[in-house]
Image (cartoon, rainbow, N blue to C red; front, side):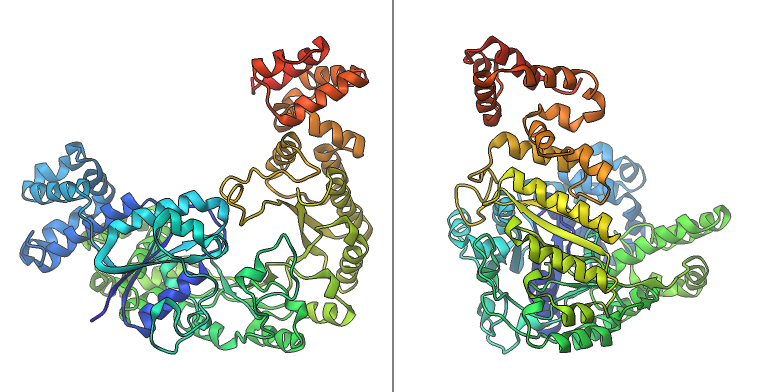
Length: 615
């Protein structure tokens, strides 16, 4: 007998799909034959969705003792009011059911019963629930999700918690939830207490689960995998040694990508999560395999026919829940592309067949409409060949890059090439790596830049400026992504990110965050842009660090007025006054009480600028 399995990702914003949950979906669905579903979002909304599904299932089968089958078509038309029905189940406000009350009052009482169950937290239950964790600064939200998920657990069910944060701070999760997390990878036959010999971590991800939710991952159109595991380094600021303690030279990917394409259609890009691929003794084999998978330099691909993929999986009864939702989304997109007269006809056909929304939709009706719909998709969904890229997302180790390895990397459609520049002491190594890349024609680069660790603010500025100089010298595009260090396994800091490095202070951290927020988290090429954002030299940069945060964020608004007034008063302070002012500013506290405690009148006048919010 198949089990009901629920996979949950907490409701944070993230770019990359949860590969570990996608592999669990493959295991539970394909290996165990379980009924698997995925959710990301507000679990109260999920509860209402489950109850609404019971409403339509009751209409369909009569098993819920709500309706007999002859009422099915009469009720399915209310699928177009899916959002109203969900709102009623959550709130009980009768205004959401005005149409139903007027046309079919018969359905009103069963819907009221669903609202009663929602309030009583009488939800559908699952035999297995798996909750993913990511960064430790999402600790509170993850804990909240885990505890809320318990309401969906069957009496004899099990909840499993795993992922990055759960591995780094397992005791904190156990204390907050009562659940002992799974630590590390799913790379052992005994993981999750199972008795078969399947290694979950080696399974291909199930991409279909991404269509079960409303959230769209920006990087979803990529094969998400790795060609190596672990790292030979043991950097004190890095968690890889805990997450992937054993270095594996080569994890083959060809068969995984083939199976993914066969089931879900080809993906455009190859997103490799290797932590140190250059350390592999089988590096040449890895490059050869990546090329064989269709990612050699100049490689393009034709996007799959999503309509055909969706229809194929519906016919195969592979995750009907996901592909019904996807087909409705494809219908909506097709309708937007059709000429007005055709769009109207298409809407009418969908309405007649209850295919305006997922609620009440049936794949049988989708199959019946295929002859009518397919020619429209073929005509209005033009597919053009696209360049496909390889992204070693975790970065390449500049210390291990040499002529041979760079020449081999240049055989791929590498975009961008990511290299970390975490310490100013690595300048020579870093610059050599960038010049090697440019020599072999790789000029689109991305740079991880750690700060708030052992560096000084001056080191941080100089590393950014080195990139600007290299861009001009080599005609390259280097995008720097400053990353604030926080001790991710320290209970005092991992959930709040309040850690301040030995050479930093609260005001400097806030100033950097204000600058990079304005640049949307990255620092690109262009000297004028850089010098405007960070200053022309170290003196101007240091002045920016002390500038009121409002003046940094809204630079254009204040630079010729209040910001200039602040600058004149700041520079006019004598030595003792400057020392006192900097001491107060570095604490980044500017209440009336804080300011009134300052001895110097000139400093108190200066500090008033820090109380200004946007006008």
